[in-house]
Length: 155
Image (tube, rainbow, N blue to C red):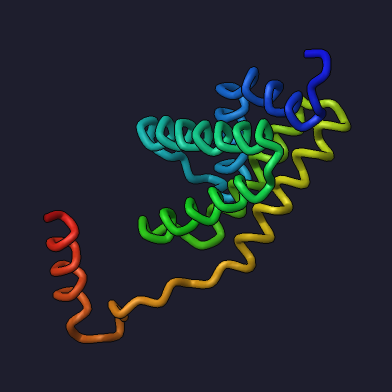
C-alpha cells in the first residue's frame, strides 16, 4: 500500500482484523465491566455485531482522516444507547475495550493515530449536552405522554 498515509493504513489493518477484533473487544468489555455476568449467546452475538459496526465506522473515519466523523458517530451512538436505557458508562467503557483490542494489531505509528480518534470520541462524549425532554419521568402523566409520543412516531 505504497503512498498511503499512516491513518489510512490503520484503517486497512483494522478492517482486515475486524471480525476478530469485534469479538475480542466484546469479550474484553464483558470481562472488564461485567465480571461474573454471562450474557446469553443471542445477546453476545448482537454485542459482537454492534462492536463490528462501531469498528467499521472507525475505519471509515480513519480512511477519511476525520476524527470529528468518528466523534460525531460516537455521540449519535450515545443518544441511541440512552434511548435504549443503557448505562451512560457503557459506551465509554466499550470504547476503551475496543481501543485496547484495536491497538494489539497495529504498528506503533498507527496506534498513535488511532488513539487520537478515540481521544476525540471521548472528548466529544464528555462535552455533549443532554437533549432536554418534555417527558420528565417525575411528571405523573409521564407514561401516558411517552406512549402517546410513541404512537405518533409509529404513525
